[in-house]
Structure formats: C-alpha cells, structure tokens
Amino acid sequence: MKIQRALISVSDKTGLVPFAKSLADAGVELISTGGTAKLLQAEGIPVIEISKFTGFPEMLDGRVKTLHPMVHGGLLHLRDNPEHLAQIARHGIKPIDLVVVNLYPFQETVAKKGVTQEEAIEQIDIGGPSMLRSAAKNFHSVTVVVDPSDYGPVLESLRDNEGATSLKLRERLAIKVFVTTSRYDCAIAAYLNGKQECSSSFSVSLPLSSGLRYGENPHQTAALYGSFNEHFQKLHGKELSFNNILDINAAVDLIDEFLEPTVAILKHTNPCGVGSDADLREAWEKAFATDKQAPFGGIIVCNRPLTEPLARAISEIFSEVIIAPDFEPAARALLQKKKNLRLMQHLAGAPSPLAEADIRSVRGGLLVQQKDRQTLSEVESKVVTKRPPSRDEMSAMVFGWKIVKHVKSNAIVYVGRDRTLGIGAGQMSRVDASRIAVWKAGEAGLSLKGSVVASDAFFPFPDGLIAAAEAGATAAIQPGGSVRDPEVIEAADARDVAMIFTGVRHFKH
Image (cartoon, rainbow, N blue to C red; front, top):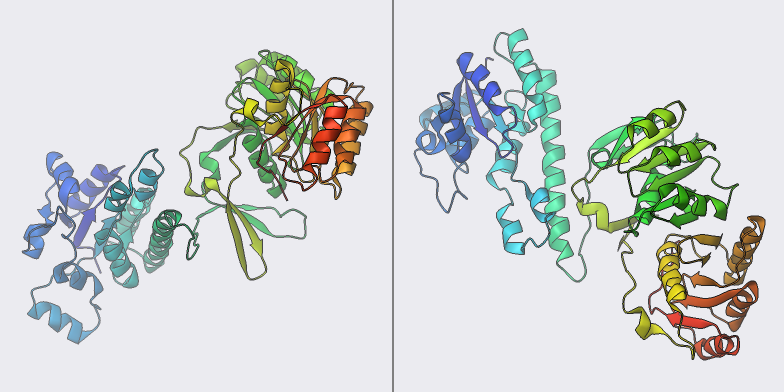
C-alpha cells in the first residue's frame, strides 16, 4: 500500500527538511507536533498540527499530545481485518502509514555536569516510544523511522515501489525501533538506579559497533558494542583486535591520571614504563628506560599531540598501537610508513553512562562496580613515620600512586619524581612483586637508591618494607590497614624511611 499519511515528531532534526519535502512532493499528508511542525511550516512544507488532527489540544506543557486513539488507532489497526477497518471508520480514525520519531535527548542530558534529577526526568520521552512501538508492532503495514540515517533508504524504497516501502525494509526499521527503545529505557533505569544507594537491577543495551576477527584467542568469537568509535578515531593501520581494544582502554585510563606531559608504555594492560617531561621525547626516554624488552609489540600513549622527535624515537621499536590526542603532520607521516601500526586519536567525546562502570561477567550474572577514580589528597596529613618525606619524595609518591593503581595486584612500583624505575605486577605475594620490580630495575641498569616505593595494598608484614629499603627506597606510599601496621612503621623508622598511609586501597584483579 502506498504511504498516504505520515506523522513526524523529532528531537534530532538532522536531514528532516529535505526528507519531509520529498514526502510532501510525493503527495504524502504530513502531521506534526510542536517544534517540528513550526520548522516544517517555516520551510513552506504543508503540515497539519497534531491538535487539529486529533481534535484535542496539547496539554500539560506538551506532555500529552500524541497519546490519543486517533494516533494509535491509526497506527495499530490491521489493514486486512474487516472488523478493524469498520471500527476506525465508525470513529473517524484515519490510517497513519509512516511514523518518523526520535526521542528526547535523555542520555545527552544526564551526561552533562550538574544536571538535576528534575531536569533529567523532563527528558524522559513518553509519547515518542509509544508511537514507535505501535508503528513497529504493525510493521507489516506501517513504516517507522527512528534514525535520520534511514531517511535515504526510505525515499529510495518509495521510488522503487511506486510510493510504498518493502516489507524487508519495514521489518529492519521495526527491529531498530525496539533496540532503540530498549536502550533508551536502560539508560533511564541506570540513571535512576544510580540515585539509589543499592540498585535493584542492572540493564544494558548497546548497538553493535563492529564484529571482531576473534576474541582474546583465535578460537573465541568476539564483537564490540557501544560508542567506542565516538571516543577514538583510527587514523592508520590494521583493524583493531579484541586485545588492542582492551589495551587502548587501559592506556587511556592510565594517561588520564596525568596533567603534565606524559608518555606511558603498556603491555597486556599493565604499565611497563611511565615518564613525565615538558619535552615528550624526554618523557619517552624515561618511560622506555624502565623496561626495554616488554614494550616490543606494546601500546604507547601520550597526553599531548605526538611530535616528530617522539615519533622518530618510537619508530625504532615495533609497537601495536600508538594513542595521542593528535599527531603532528610530520610525526603522522613518519609513523604511517609502518603499515601494521595502528594510530589512534583519542577524541574528547561525550561521556558515556557506562564510563563510570566496571563490568565483569561471572557465572549466572554480572559484577558491576564503580570505576576506581579515587585520587590522592592532603598528602602531608597522611605521614605516619618520624621523618616526613622531602619535597622530591613527596612528588615521587604522588607520581607512583597514580601508576600503581593501574598495575595488576599484587602491585609494587618503584619511581623517581617523574619516571618509573621498576614495576612488579600480578604476583601472589607482595614480596615477590617487589623482587620482580627490583630485578627489572637491575636489568634496565637503573639505580633504586633514593627511590620511592608504591604498593597498591598494605604491607602485611615488615618484610616487604624492609626489602624495599634494602633495594634503596627512602620513602614508601601504601594504604595501611594491616594489623601489623605498627611493626611496619617501626621498621621504616629504624631505616629512616618516610612513609605515607593513604587509607585507600587500589586492588586491580
């Protein structure tokens, strides 16, 4: 059946005017609401306002305008059911063959800083999802459009089918509606749940972003869902793998800790070197010196536009991915000579509601927690030893604490004021993690004399602190909280080691 009547009510007006004009030129009667009707009228496109169509005025500040039998009867009646046709004729209900609706910008609203709950609730669309669902349920007869990117395919189908659309297209568009409304409701539930002390449920619905060749290993299937591509733009190189995406996420989480110019190198989501310097090339040298073996095939990230000198230094080793907020033209041209190297631009995209959630799958469900965004404050008040740290030691403590948070537990990191010296990650024993960090520093030819040691959790016994002091550390930063804290403090005082208890643990399993 030809499309004779369309109802248009959109929040996102991208591409709407030429689409509506094409419909009107094809003889389609247009019904519209509020701001959409005003826009179409201003463009000289004939349109019937919804209140005239239903015979009932918009009310309650526009909250009630399309929730009417003239709308939903026109959408839901079955065109091949004589009784339905008789009923709508008896009540003067006219068929609506096309619905063009997109929803109030709830997700964009709640992503803004300082938004109130009242402001968020005003962006919960009621009439829009109702019309979409009515039209999608009756897709055998009704065409429904929720995404402006589908305007073109609909017009093309109208041209190819003498003013009608194909069943295949209508079904695809209906599926898109239910995916969209499901995702919309999930966003609302997640926001309101976040206002509760303990969420009663957790839901997530994300669109497919891309299929992946395989998962963590070649025998595992995998796909990427959500808006990852709104936060990163691939400028060069092969397709991203499952592991690449995990590493990129870990790299950006780490580099976001730093305001000063910083370069970090990661492997299997663990930092293996971090350096800060006003000169990015020098920052790289500090990071790379920590471990010159692990970066092979690793991930490199910086928080400033990547310069040509840094690009020349990086190009001397094989890397999987390089991430930066931008690339100087000469640097990009140099790095693009490596065809397999992925260059990723980190975009300042809109925050995602999922950005603050850490989600893990477990048998029978999901574990959901807040991201570990805890930062160190009032450092001076946290000194627990007789000797307070020097200014340089204090700077190194803050630097090391930012990094140890991103190292798999048990984690030990030896640092200077602006560089890593030795990193021990993912060990069953904290002493073993320290031994690995000391060994790595020795392998790299770096002295730990005068270094600071950072531990993601408390030293359960004095032996960990003693081992760090014997390695050359003169200061330590750790959460504290062990029943043997007094013994650990006593061991530090006996060795003139300054120590801070942060009161915050940074386990990373």
